[in-house]
Length: 97
Image (tube, rainbow, N blue to C red; front, side, top):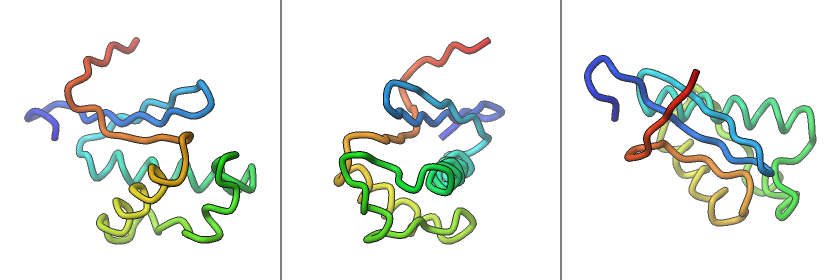
């Protein structure tokens, strides 16, 4: 949760590349992560080399759908793969230019 007037940060770590997502709420940031996963799946055909059939077994949730469905899907992704990885940054200090 962001401090009043503050930003919320989410991080996708993917094969040594990090994608920082900034939004006004954790829900906004989480939904944007799903949109990024969806565009990557469309371009690459798979999200994870260690579980290439993950999205066949667990289709991507609608980024505008219930947040509980998105959170459940992200939990399954964390359990099935080492990369990609997504989380909301809570105690970390983010310095960006």
